[in-house]
Length: 335
Image (cartoon, rainbow, N blue to C red; front, side, top):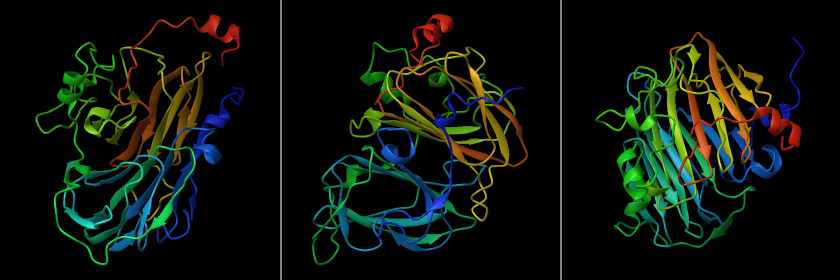
């Protein structure tokens, strides 16, 4: 079969690299939209945290001219809400200290001083940390803050448990029936989505948490953290869909000592031709605005689990299955 190349620029393999000076203490997966992701409107990073450390930044405080999310999640494949770590972060000019011991997303509105993040304790094998900065290139400025950390509740709402809240999304958007993909019907009583066992598709996630703009102070983003282990098609109800906003679809392994190992092979259909592109190492797919993509199919998996994340630059995730005239779309030159 002839290799597919038309959309090869939308498939990126991760490489460990240094982040901006003073931001992280060791190499990580670091991708800026303007430089590394074909103009995608965000900065994305991912790393494993195996031992106590200080980061973001290593010392002092910084501000960004865009909203940012700092996500901390566990790697226990038995329970996505398990989190064997204790972490603190300082927020605001007051250096208000917040400590958490559960999977968490820290919301940083643009212009808010923050940092450092201190990982006080972490169990084995590791936790994961990823960041989403809602600007296409990394920008930061160091700022002065109080002489010593303080206690208080001014920024308490910036620190939120990483858990699905489908009911809040639907309550905020009563005219929307949801994404159109069925995820609203597969959430358990703990806020964990279980799409593989509840009929979305045999290759879909064992456990997923999904947060939307309404859960994230109105930020123009929705994102997931998921654990996957099964071969098969991810969605049985449809083939191809699009979104009104751009997104990335990220694959990572679960061996913190082998960050370049994914342990599975995933196929993605891309473009009106539904050309198939494969990732069998950590990396991501880019879906520009209106770009047809899917189906996703896990071809094989030889590990207990691998990780998958969606980062979509919209507070909602409109993605109903649609009858797309692929021939007409291709003929028009849209893609």
